[in-house]
Image (cartoon, rainbow, N blue to C red; front, side, top):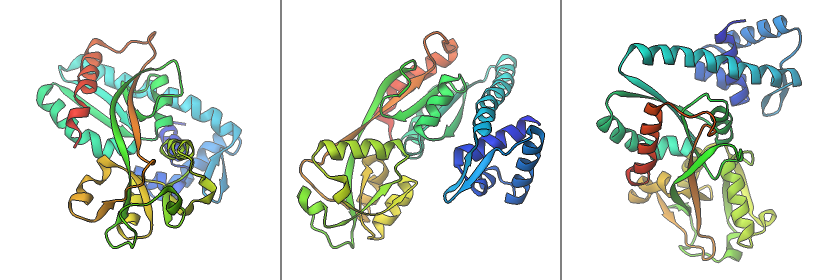
Amino acid sequence: MNVQNLKMFIKIIETGSISKAAELMNISQSALSQQLRVMETEIGTRLFERNYNGVIPTDTGKIVYNHAMEITSSYDRMFLDISNSQNQNKTIHIIANPCVYSYALPCTLYHVKNNYPQYTLQMEVMSSQAIEDKIAKGQADMGIIIGKPKDKNLSSKKVFTDRLCLVAGEKMEVPGRLTREELYNYPLLMLVKNQKTRQLMDKSLVKSGIQIGRLHILYALESTESLKLSAINGFGLAFLPYMAIKKELYHKQLRIIHCPGLEFENNYFSIKRPSDVPASPESAKLIKYIEKILEDTIC
């Protein structure tokens, strides 16, 4: 069993799908399935069970995953440390949730490179919970997630706030202002329930007096981008972060629907290693700079 096989295994766990993992790793699904069978033969038992959504790890698979994360992290950090020791160019590993990665960070990173050209920024995107896991294990220098981290041992700092807007496609027949009761009459598009963004959204709705069971949720999607595209096509209303829809509002593909009492905000936090595992001085300096400028440099 080699490191690449372990990385392949981790990617299957993170995506929950052999086909998605194969696509991301730019190999064929059959080749990936064959590598997985080799791993299962070496270990002597199945590592995944199939369900209607894809694959889920067995109990043995979960054990292998935890050790694989540690092994691959140590392997990658070894080469990163070697590179940093041999070159003046320093590498900082940053992980962000999909929305921040796509809509907030690009302009921030431009400013970082202009002011700190000696740094190489290694970027990665994954769910907020996966980011917490990686940061806790020292597998990245900085993470940016939605909401406060569940792991109380992580160091966190709020770096910016973004409002959630109820939007509709320009062609959808819906008034520009709705009462909370009228909201129940329109199809609503939401993210899937296992995403932290959706969980925070549900909590905010309930806190505002909305009965989730009464909402006409047409279907749930896995990404903000697919949610936005469905809303543009007039399939239903959607709650979307303002940073993700600025362009579509400007080009009149989407419009904001005002619903008094349903004005929500999402807080985004930077997270770092626990205090007993300090970042290197180089990493700490750049992380502090990113935290300082992020709110003012969102695209």
